[in-house]
Figure: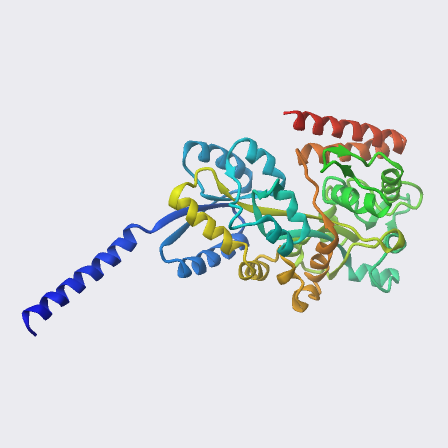
Length: 420
């Protein structure tokens, strides 16, 4: 080998080494935060691995905390210039995160509003403000009706109820009482502390011909004939001589169903994992019962991913790329397979395999007619419905009076928030 060849080889070697060292030295690292849940951590770990393989110049560090500490950790870290570049948050927290300047809007050139609304299920519009979106989900949740197959068979109920009238009939058949008339087995669970306040707002009120809120959820609109009819139907579960439920039965509705002491139970898709493998419990799931004239309505919620205000420069660019990937069809299918939460796009959820799945299918099909309540303070707004039912059940307050109190109190919460 002559001297020119030796020099050329040496130069090429040095250049190659420098390139490798440079790419390693200048790889951008971003941080992703979510609350700890085994399946979610597993799924995100797989997504990060796939993303890094396709983007070798970006590394993603995942950090997670117990749910109880999560919001506090996020709120403290980002203003201090630490913590995540991409963060997971519950959709109902969006206003709080925006007000505290913890997150920034998604870039419209990468996430155009018209494209999002053409590709995602409609409820993600709750993340939109003007022409921009602030966050997007990988997965969503809806409600469905769980049923105990053994109790149905014992009571002679041939098939899961498909209408609200059939639900009451089936629940009556599965209700059991002791010699003193006390309910020992509920035909249907009841309790606004769980998912029933969502079912009532976005399901029953709409099925009885109403609309729970107006002005983009700024104005309470359920203190109406439709709202009262919806609450009367719901109260029929636990009131009267033919009650099929009892408020506070076994403390929590989901506990009663899991223990095999409830025939029917409305819950979210996130409950599937807790019920699978429960010894002695044989259960199925179906869509929420249809209302008057076959009207169907459902409630959907979701956790979203957002880019934090901490992400700037090259970290911001990397965060945008990561957001694109974790909201892709591939990511949503993986999330369904690993976590069991529903895809946020019809292109994934409404495939024949997913939409007709005996367990996930009823939840996925329910997304097509689901609504997402824009809460400003979900816990406070839920508590008002808990108290409305308690006034009726424990104090014998007339339904109309109790509902008026709840509506006025909730409107005050909304007015105070939006005045700010």
